[in-house]
Image (cartoon, rainbow, N blue to C red; front, side, top):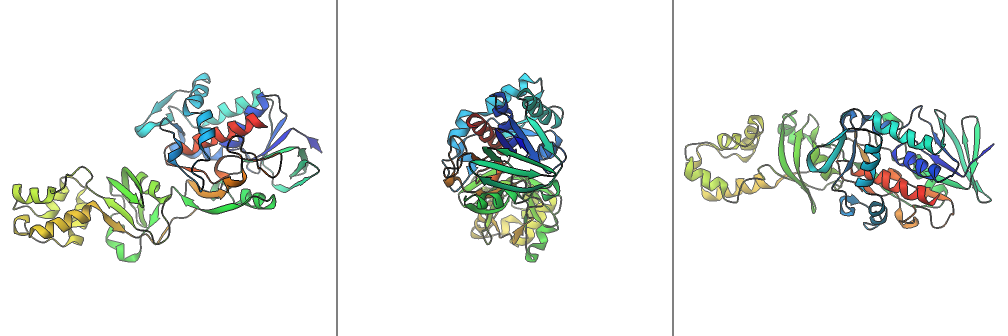
Length: 390
């Protein structure tokens, strides 16, 4: 049996961050993971360049049953703090749209940086074997990992959620949480493509067509690209609203967000001999313009249409309703909404209130960010907060 000050379950972003911070504070830390290499989700993110944070990070860009929970950690470890580490390690980066920061080179640089930070804290790595048992007795946690037995007064659950199971993701964190008396908010896929029912076959036939829209679900609205797929809807705007979507909810799409009210009546006056499809094609891909015009059934020249007909068409184009019949599930979800309930955790330290020594960080808990680097920033911030407390 090997003894440590802390055992961190999970070698992803949050687990490595917590380990590095605690290790550099003099704690004897071991990271345990069933995967053979660390940071698997980091490696595939951002098309292999890792969208490692977002300059627009703010608590209102996270979903949680307790929307105030993320404020403390995000305020104490900011995007600027992580960027400072990136630059200290000589990693070149660039900003894309909407505050998203990416590596110029490879996501492997971020993993290497975190491993270097862990090495600076003499953190032990135990990877590539199954976690066979986790228990707690007499103020200590015991983890059986492969043939090894590890023990420590502190345990950090950093094993993420069930999104992207091909990387080895499971609901293991939730099983552990329940075992140790923490509640779990229903986990569901987030940042995930949505599927459309058979009656929307006309739109599913537009597979590969993309256009900038405003997508809405409830009070949430995002202006980015939407992409039609052979199964339904994807693209950044759709992935964003998917985190808010529940079964039977409608998704509203504004296909022409730059058009002022009354634009179609204006087109009737200025281009009376044009058809609706022709007018739509000036702002939308041809195939999409054709499909929308077909659904709206505005036949013939605009000059021959009643104003009420055109007003109705304009209203539908500005708030076109789709009712998805599902999503592409955890297999295609970038993250998980829900997870270990924050009500049982300290927002300052990520520690369980009722069981001293137990911590939860990263995606395992019920804090989920928008698309665009927000979830990595939560991994860094929550990991830092736990690492400071271990």
